[in-house]
Image 1: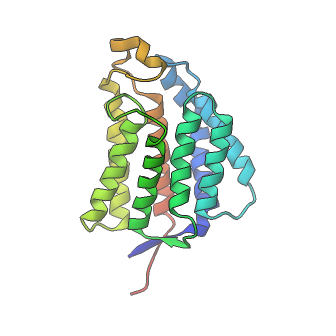
Image 2: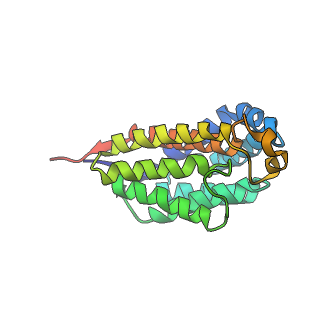
Length: 217
């Protein structure tokens, strides 16, 4: 059985910061097709500030995620700050005071983040938004665990479903946000929030898997 030492929170958070900074221009390019074109700029601003805030600190996963949540809520304009802030705050709450987490606890962390986000948003899967990535990814992970798959297999399922969810937004018509005003013209383009969510979930899976430890028999 595999487990994650939650004292590795700083390193995992820095990985999340890095993936957003690396894709700043790409995210804004995606957003520019049907939105304001500033998604990458805003996300990079928030994640950069988080990286600076935690630099040199030794943080648990819960404290790291909580710090990310507070920074994003205070620094990103529009809806993305509250949405991502709520997601990471819910995740932080689920692993508070845990020294290690197994595949089941990781799944509850994901589910708690999803519930926290849904508490502040009426958006649904199919609306062409980050939930089109997040919901299937969380469900795929939990389904794998329920089937008895180990941590690594569940993370693989999460990655694959996040990618599929992101790609599904290309054929959807936007029902929320500023892109909704475009109607049918929004079809044929990826949703920027779905793309950034896919990047973050994929990196979270990669960073977690690379730090998994195996319990002694």
